[in-house]
Image: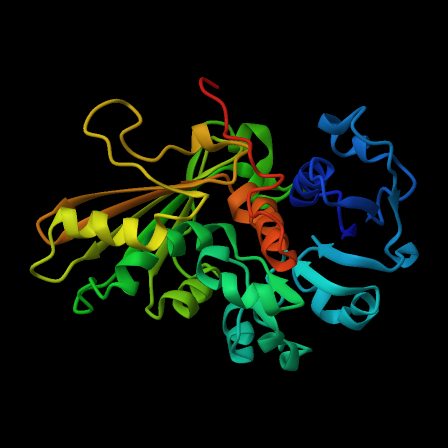
Length: 340
């Protein structure tokens, strides 16, 4: 199957390329970058030296393929969708352009009027564990935001099993690595400013909150914090559980919903430094690790992912596998490293 990547010079595009080069069912046909057109992909992704000799091309030179991944910056695909839809029957978009079903949410959370509101219902939201059956029938998938992925996957079984007491607010915070901001230089990414930081960069109003509300059906009071780490997200949420549920009931709910999921791991150890989820050991893997601890009726839920994998390129490849009937795990078998 021939696949091309639109906008492949960024971190997510590079991860897509790395994963697809290992996929036995996929041939990389073209990868685009306006800035680096004509240069080998190893110029932007040095880890791919001797893995491929493919060069970046202009988006205007893209040819027909079976599937097109778009890793363009937010708001670009929605403006030029027709130009790319004619190149491939199936599209998987890693940006936010088609994640939200309600066009009014784009005005509220992104400050724009969506130019293609009629397409929003054609895209399946990209968390496989929630929308696997829809993906099998769809031609368009919109990958979820990385923070949204960490929150939604960690809390979904509690809402699915109606265990959450709606009389109390739900709060969640993510501690995020610097790669979440992409590879464009900014004042906040300048080494003297970023090194050693624990910086609250979005205590309220984070755009991924809209995805959480859409998928969980409730508003999550969400905050995001930058920390001195390149890759990874550690999510901590506080929810209140209805009376009568024990820690064993909570464990059973996660096992019932995620027991057969290949990339969800429930972490519940009594001792050791890894008794809770830890993003460090997930680097390069497509796993989401979830743990919890009950304190009376307050449940603290902890989730960890690699933001560039399960939060971006990894979930996109997983969705591609589901969409085309491949084994879901193909190309995503890397387990992470320890120690690192």
